[in-house]
Length: 154
Figure 1 (cartoon, rainbow, N blue to C red):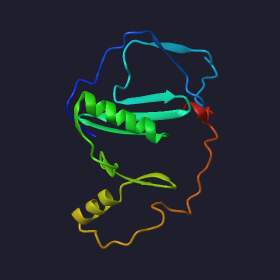
Figure 2 (cartoon, rainbow, N blue to C red; figure 1 turned 180 degrees about the vertical axis):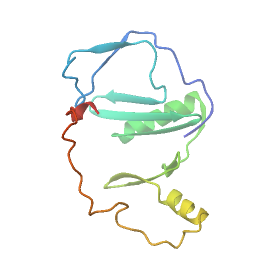
Figure 3 (cartoon, rainbow, N blue to C red; figure 1 turned 60 degrees about the horizontal axis):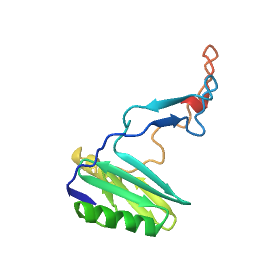
Figure 4 (cartoon, rainbow, N blue to C red; figure 1 turned 120 degrees about the horizontal axis):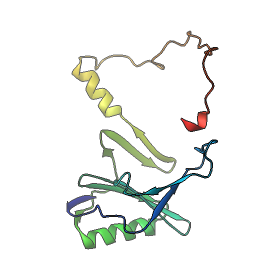
């Protein structure tokens, strides 16, 4: 969806507290939350209604959105089009240099076109691909002197 003209960034008028996301809990401060003074990322929005979810990403004058319910997605598109002058561009195929392929098996993101364009730019368009880009014979050793870290925090 392409926005022709719109004011889409508002101010937070109610108190909002943010909790730690599941899987990223801090062992030192398990009950910590913080008060949100302003939106941290004004480009990504999530709506949960019943068992359905709608995700909306805004970048400059482009909006991409999708959800678990066709009715919820259609309702969002209709509401936005009635409020703002917009053009529905159809199924997402390219966004910020990424290629998007949607199918019954899921949604896949890749950069095949970008990779081909770079290879052509440097006269490597006829190069043969490799299955892995690093040596498979190099063994990785543990850092015996290093300090162990909690993998959930990173």
